[in-house]
Length: 117
Length: 110
Image (tube, rainbow over all chains, first blue to last red; front, side):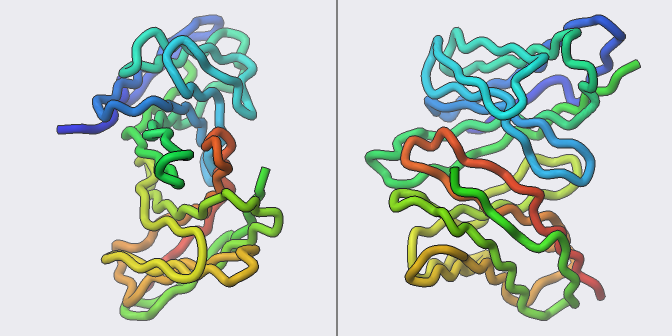
């Protein structure tokens, strides 16, 4: 089946520890995104990537890092610099053919809930 | 960036039609309007997308007036399972700056 997978579903982080959240898609999408959602809040953009080996900061990139070595994968690392990492993290992808199709739809993964011990 | 404004919450009853309006006063010429639905602890799910006038699919209708400064998501005959948060997004031509607002929490009551 085509889609986006995220792992793990739940992740626990100790103080001062870096943790990496996985996001994989087999939709052949060029663009991928990471969002953070806090309880009762909307999604906030952390990082996005429009093409392999290129990514851009979103609204709340501090304390996070990403890589895009493969088209299918866009892992997010929550570093020790992120002082309030407890949240629900969502990965998304899109075709990114805005100029040709005139529209863009994002497809979302099931999310990873990160908790701090 | 085209920001969006939606009501924080709405209540409805089963079988009613629900209309959720989103304001996007500074929408750009090339921007599209997209609505998503999100259940707790799940990723958002695409509902409908439009540019102008009216768009209808098997789930909902989207009404966009001529000035495109607002849009209305219409859910016909809602059921309890439609209880969710609904997000309105406006995306620019590059697709880089689509932003989620806080969304509208719809509660459908029996």
